[in-house]
Amino acid sequence: MTYSAVFKEHLAHPHNAGELPGATVVVEETNPVCGDRLRLYLLVEDDQIETAKYLAYGCPPTLVCGSVLTDLVRGKKIQEALAITKDVLIAAAGGLPGRKHHSAALALETLRSALTQLGTSTEEKSLNLT
Amino acid sequence: MKTQRIYLDHSATTPVDARVVNAMLPYLTGKSGNASSVHSFGQEARAAVDRARREVAALIGAKQNEIVFVSGGTEANNLAIRGLCEAVSEKGHIITSVIEHPSVRGVCDALEKRGWEVTRLPVYENGIIRVEDARAALRPNTVLITVMFANNEIGTLQPVRELGELVRTERQSGRRSLWLHTDAVQVAGRESIAVEELGCDLLSLSGHKLYAPKGVGALYVRRGVRLQSQSIGGHQERERRAGTENVPGIVAFGEAARLARTEISERRSHDKRLRDNFENEVLRRIEDVVLNGEKEMRLPHLSNLSFRFVEGEGLLINLDLQGVAVSTGSACSSGTLEPSPVIRALGRSDELARGSIRFSFGKDNTDNDVERTVDVLANAVTRLRELSPLNKALAS
Ligand SMILES: Cc1ncc(COP(=O)(O)O)c(C=O)c1O
Image 1 (cartoon, each protein chain N blue to C red):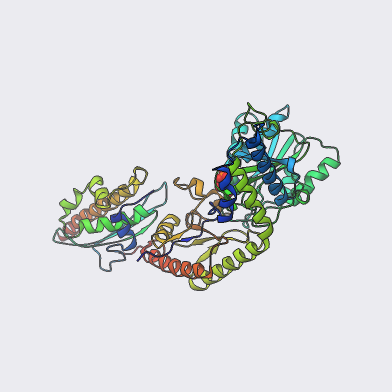
Image 2: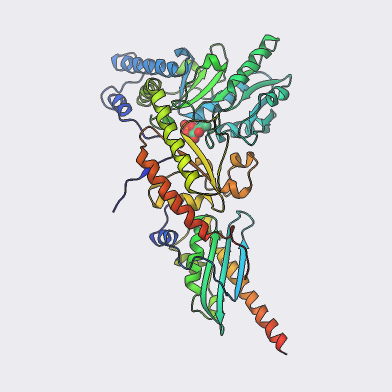
């Protein structure tokens, strides 16, 4: 299987890799079939994703999707981030073979669950305030 | 700058030796006869096939009429197991192991679907079956024991000679229809093989694992063992494998077998020295590394290691980007998401099974290759561990 130059570049030099102390939200999702894992850290201020970092375990596309996803969400409003689709992610990764699309699915699932958690925690916060 | 690539996947296949190419070339160009033809072209081809047969026989201590040329290890295993089982009149029982190559495992599975009984012997943490288990598994209708000589993923040597003794003892006490097959594809050219000493009836070989081209192999069939041919429609190979002989491939295999026989001790000590240096360096420089399979009773050229918190394919591609070629799982079954069944059979966790990498050395590797591989590997493992969530607490 041949991977694209973009893909290899992300693999050799991942962007935004590592932990993010002080993150607003941290979420980790696992693909139950293959055991791939993605942990996403988001620092959110005023509805905007200021910083995103990630950790990943699994096949190369999963590692690359973490790098690509964090690039994509940085600087985005939450609504914009929610609008990212699998196709956008796959294109940004320089393409993925069909049998590796599950990596993109895992990345999006992790993002959605982080954003949902963010939504709930801000709701909780506002509840506490009242 | 383009760096030299390093090939450490000799258990998947070996590069063809230049001397082997030279030996086969005349049979691709001028000497292009069919070995069944009566004229001088045919006689030339026949003589070359016969010479190759003597060389392959000599490699394993067999007689030349006990060698059947086939297309490779997979076909040899198919012919051995199906050929033997179809030659006996009633469906019986087969004993095999849980770590066989897919070409043995698959044939046993297929026979089981057709009504044969199959016992799959476990391996223990060391990746080796126990002869007592085989003895205990024997049934009155056991026809075949098929256990590989050495495993292709972890290199562990199986007690085939002891299985041979078991079969011999059973025969002495009156059992008539019990045969022993062993898949020696990974062993040939790496450890010496003597079929008489092993006491096996059938033994599979493949050319491309010993510096011959892909697409040629052989099955040793002890004199007197009856097989049902799996390819019908010609008298070739004493009716055991119909079809025009692959003369250039067979010639190449013969030359590769001759070279393997004469060079075996150098190759063995060369590969072992590189492998041992490699392992020592890896264990010295990288933490949390697990050796898969028994350390002593294994092939001299192979090392299978799991790097905790790191997934195998990710590591493999990272090494490949740096020009180092290795493999994870069985070369034939990568692409499936299942962790290696062989490593799982050792009782390892899914995580360790997914993190297993096979490094297999060959005669053209150098000390420099080892040094550079360890550097590249240490670097890649460190980077992937930094990236891994498995060794970091999930705390926000
Ligand atoms: C143990 C074992 N048996 C059989 C085979 C199949 O041999 P071939 O590739 O010649 O069909 C292989 C090679 O992958 C092997 O390692």
